[in-house]
Amino acid sequence: MQLTDKFGRKISYLRLAITDRCNLRCQYCMPAHGIDIVNRTALLSYKEMYRIIRVLSELGVDKVRLTGGEPFVRRDFVNFLESLSFNDKLKEINITTNGALISNHIKKLEELNINAINLSIDSLQKEKFAQITRRDVFENVYDTFEKLEKSNLKLKLNVVVQSGFNTDEIIDFVELSKEKDIAVRFIEEMPFNGKGQREMQEVWDFNKIINHIKGSYSEVENVLSKKSSTSRNFKISNYKGTFGIIPAFTRTICNDCDRIRITATGMFKNCLFDGGVFNVRDFIRDGASDDELKELFINTVHKKPENGFIAEASRDNDVSESMSTIGG
Image (cartoon, rainbow, N blue to C red; front, side):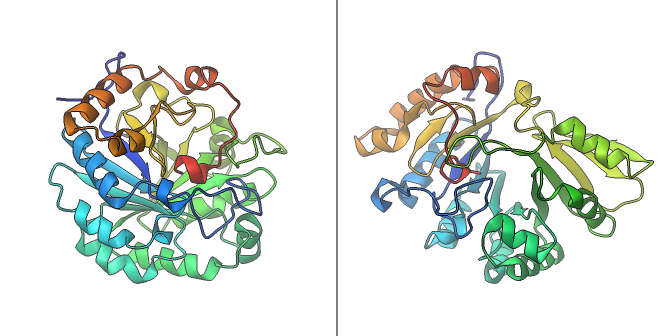
């Protein structure tokens, strides 16, 4: 049986937030003082997360991305990864991380056949990195980048393009793909910082980013991507790696969406921009059987909105969550 929405889109990809806690305080993600974190008992347990993934994998979900907060902040996360590796229905287990805490775990991640690491790094300059993250960990993160680049793990760099902060480094990030077989992903900034919309000096959307890059290179080639890819991908002629742009805010990728999200507290989201559909944690703790969970997932996914604009319009309130609570 395959999870399918009313538009015929097959859902095969789960983004699961391991925790709402993070060791950084990126200014586009949360206020300087952080956010109101929930009691630990409100978080999904590893046992509950494992069960959710197992049930969803029996409904055709074969790709899982583990996010946060910062997933490596949570104790025993690597042990949880090891347990997930025994689920033979999963084709891919991917992780999004800020990289400050994983350097010593890279060998183990290779042993567990983790498919890919998305490393969030928004500046290649130490002082600017500290300004964006409000933490002095650039050297740790860059060391992780170099180690990952030499590992067997697929590596993508996530770069949130922030007006007034790092737009002058876009070309520097593209240049990383010249000699390194990596994928750089520029992400449109979204208004999820835990306080509502953050003021932006100007909007750096897909068109502005790609035009800026094309202004520096004469040969920018299109790269064929999966239909459900969140990014539109390119490469510079004769460069080893690629770069792409994720139109997360302008939402031009919605038509082929194959994703669902579950937050660290168990809130099921058909779309990044919706307000949450139901809390799977509560159903589990109320004694729901696997069959009841499957029925719930099937019925909920069938109601998945066509795109993020419709999802946002159906909310009871404005977008104001932190990405650390939604699952970055």
